[in-house]
Image 1 (spheres, rainbow, N blue to C red):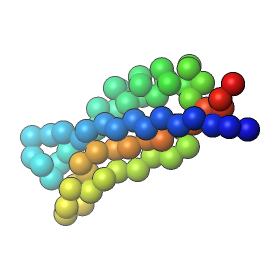
Image 2: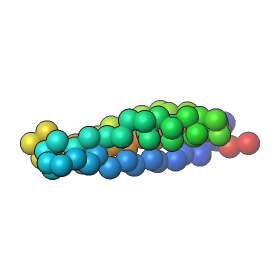
Image 3: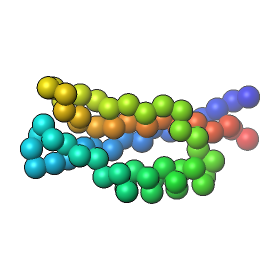
Image 4: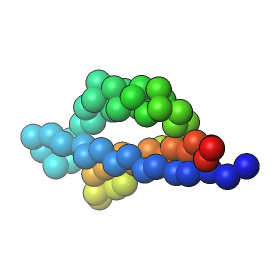
Length: 66
């Protein structure tokens, strides 16, 4: 089976750089949209800004190539 992949990157933003927040509703809506298109989430991780603060959240999806 052959696969294609898609990467979704979302910024974490906030008033203070050390307190970045992710818009969970936006992420959920994007993930549901991709799921309805046949994409399956295979991995998700954050990127560190320093001191434990999150800069971005990255989600990787895959779906079979037809």
